Length: 95
Image 1 (spheres, one colour):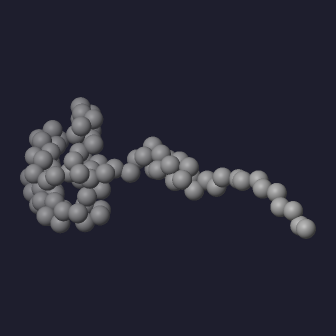
Image 2 (spheres, one colour):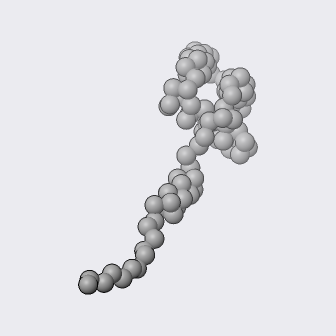
Image 3 (cartoon, one colour):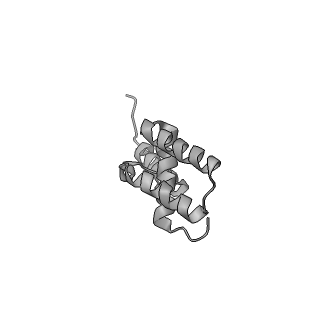
């Protein structure tokens, strides 16, 4: 949707993540209620967005972590750094 801010996009993405993981069961019900109401009486997309943002604002979505490609790559890099073995060259003598 055009005209949506990056904060609103991030909030929507966090809500999707929370719904997919089942973090807030009532959130999915509230969104479904809104969707059902819009099917019965269509409203302007801007008003729909405002209502959806109002619903999302009622949940602590700031604690939901998004797994963006960049964050996944950073985790993999850190993991690789942690498990990278150090090579120690030693010499042994048989007597």
